[in-house]
Image (cartoon, rainbow, N blue to C red; front, side, top):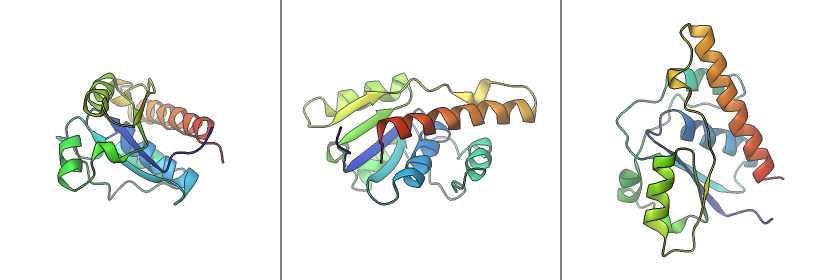
Length: 146
């Protein structure tokens, strides 16, 4: 399977799963593939647990700018310009498919758990976020072998 030239990861708010995927993908592929992320909405800040668990593996998310599909396009990033869009939530998949059905863009859905409602204690939340981080990283390594 050949590697795409550009990949967009997307989820609901671009505050947990898709920025984690963007950062982990950049760590995995370096500059070989152009990578971005976006959300259905951009109404939240980057999640602190996402920042913490990604920092553990050398991925910095503290400066991540949360952005929606609409903002991405306003900044000149047309969805049709990506080779592959990886949706990490059903809502993001629906919008990605709806906006690229007449384009040569592949859309994949990865069923990634939203960890924000898992765990009561700080440690339980960190475990849930680490599980999601590791799931995303394993899928990236399997889908984009170098």
